Length: 164
Image (cartoon, rainbow, N blue to C red):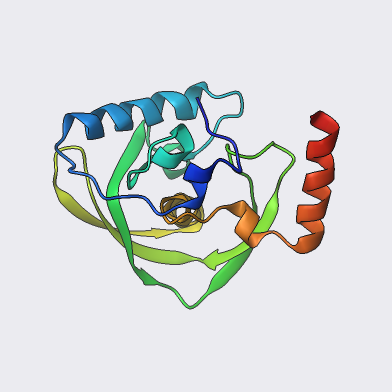
């Protein structure tokens, strides 16, 4: 089940985890299942979004032209491009109507561990880089609310009142 904003778990920094632990493998599997089973299909999902405060997320590889999903355990961004780009983003922890324009570096370099405990490095650009940064934000207690304008926050609050 996906945790909805403003659940406190979405607002705090997550802990690192042993990539070889049983709990890590179970979390990765849960993330993969939940990312595709949710009513609004996502392209990424982080552990705090399923109520667990660990530094793990998965990304769907479909936008890379590959089947399956990739797991990122204890990920780090090691380099970001100077060039940034504004794009609209949504999030599975917010209602579908909550879309926020976010400026992010176009290209990044990352390091993380896979489910076999192997450290890997990768260069990403475009949608893959954007998705990685969005999910990494979740691990640091940052979400779309942090990027929203005061006007957007006020509109969202009014929408919430109507549904309650």
